[in-house]
Length: 191
Image (tube, rainbow, N blue to C red; front, side, top):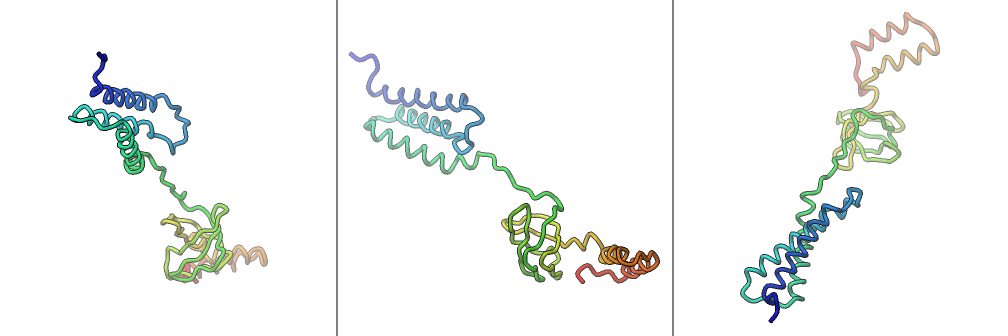
């Protein structure tokens, strides 16, 4: 006479297998590739579910069907439930970082900018302002695969750019002040 009934041996196998898999998740190193994180845990939970269903079943199916059922449950849980639990890092563009335009960005259209060594699609925050190619721009944010930029002249007035160039050539303090005052009243950043 066997010690354990065959009706009870399969559920006990799945119960033990599920507990081993769940405990294995606890002992895996944290440095394990994050792609494989939670796979033993979900497989263990699925084998515990198979054990519960076999305890409740009137007729125990063959072992090959039990394995097939466990594999289907494990695959489904790893593919659909695990991604909801895993932490995902949000990539955030640092505020007001510099980039350089590769192509001209026309008003209301996208162009290309060189940002951190990669070429990105970008558009100007001010949809009425064109940006010439080979100009320095500031990245405000990222929307999908497109960067939102503004020209550097929005942060550095045109008159200051002109006055710095004028001072290098003429060293005229009075003429530089006149240009600064005049441009303060007539300043248009998109011109």
